[in-house]
Length: 111
Image 1 (cartoon, rainbow, N blue to C red):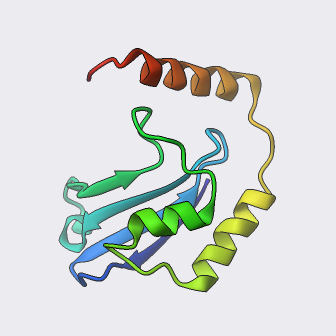
Image 2 (image 1 turned 90 degrees about the horizontal axis):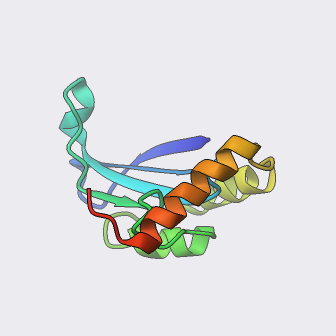
């Protein structure tokens, strides 16, 4: 898994972006910067790893989803593309886990 952190358009927000190799989507998360001081983070927005959402399969989609909160610089986009290109195939257990998440999404189960 790769993970990069940058400040959002609102300087009190931290935006984390990355590539999750086991599950194979890109992801983004927005947290208030003050929650990074050791307190439990209060996530303001999360994209890509929630089984109820569509997978984010490319950097451009991730950047578009995050655009109200951050302008993803080109060097981050390139690093994410490189992380994706260098990824390895998921293990059999990771494939099963991904399938279970997909079935949960299709089944519409609530938390």
